[in-house]
Length: 279
Image (tube, rainbow, N blue to C red; front, side, top):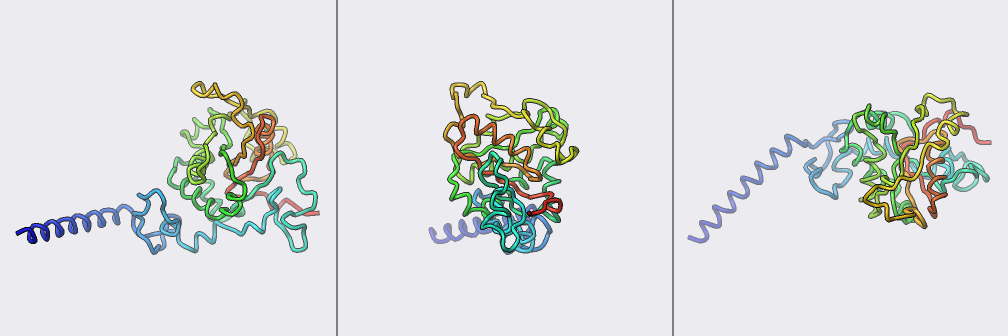
């Protein structure tokens, strides 16, 4: 009698499991989230916290959005050409930048450009989390060597954020990046002190002036007891795209003035390389 009851129970569990799997397959089919091609693992892995990236994105798309870190200058993100100084495009590259290093994931083109534009204009936390995971895996070696204490997102003016429906892609990416790295998300401690024109609408030579003095420390009411939140900390500064570096450089300057020990810029894409010449 016990054996029959156990068998019936096992069959019921199996049936329910199969039905659940069919339902999950209908919601999360075995396809790449970026191109729709088949992936080797079911998309139900989305329900797990430690989802393998290759369960969500096909190998072809990964190769399109991730480039080798060796092709970018670690000081300015420009292309390193054969014969250049090791790790840099020039021996004295970008000596005035307030941040220490920058590691883009790829060039601002093709599929990655389309993803960044989507992140800028749509509230898609799943896509932002996915690319935070991809960035972590692609730049794991650099991230581990940096040993960050906290992560900070490039802040957006509240008016512009309201116009975009509350979307700030760097903030979503920073939150996931902090969780993945086991670091603090301290984006709440930084804010835009004034509205600025979009950098894409400003001439290259004037971009630094456009963001000068645009950022400042912000102490949330429930954390005002912390007088120097960035003192002695190693900070990862997150932005979605890097062109001239004026924005992240201004933020890095503010972080340095408030005691940050080191600032590392994590960005999905390096833009504007067609207008940069190594000399």
